Amino acid sequence: MTLMLERPTISGTKHPGFEGLLDTLDELNVPAGYKAEIIKGNIVLSPWSKGYYTRVMKLVCDQLEPYLPEGHLISQAPQLFVFPGVERAYGPDIHAAHEQTYETTGNHLHGEGLSFVAELTSSSTRDNDLTDKVKAYGKADVPVYLALDMQEEQATILWTPSAKGYESRLTVPFGEKLSIPEPFDCPLDTAGFRAPKKP
Figure (cartoon, one colour):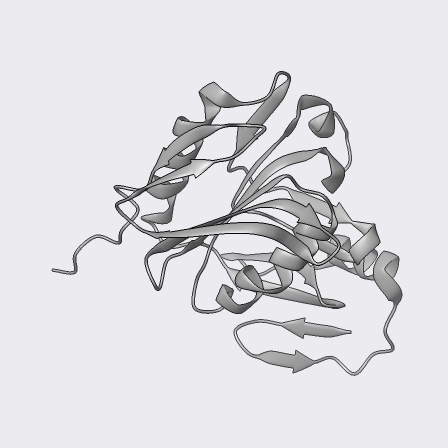
């Protein structure tokens, strides 16, 4: 098993398999300020978002909420979604799913209930957000994935999930409008997604 913070650190233990990783994740004492996910057969710890990411996540949620499919909820609450078919467990920054997905006393939610996910990249998560998660969310049949590249200040919407990831994608710079496809079929204004100016 590999436990990753900012830089990979090999733990030296025998690989326990996906279910074993989920058990380890449950028992893990995650340091304050970090979240834990399972990516590429490893438990990966990444730091919580920068302060202004909260503003961006709220803007996304507020704009999409009126267009949610019936019975779906959208949230930026920390939740772990499990994708056994691709052996991944992610805590997306924003997630929309049918309300029944959240009706559990467990802390592992079923990824197949998702209708939308969004990830806001950081320097430590950017590579996984733009590569591994694109493939895994698409293979898991999540209809829409929004990747907000906070370093390059651009938004990429991915849809038409397939075994390769996603068949369709469109990228625009922050400040432009982006069309969110079905099941939302609505515009997303990316004005207000940029970082605050440094004093």
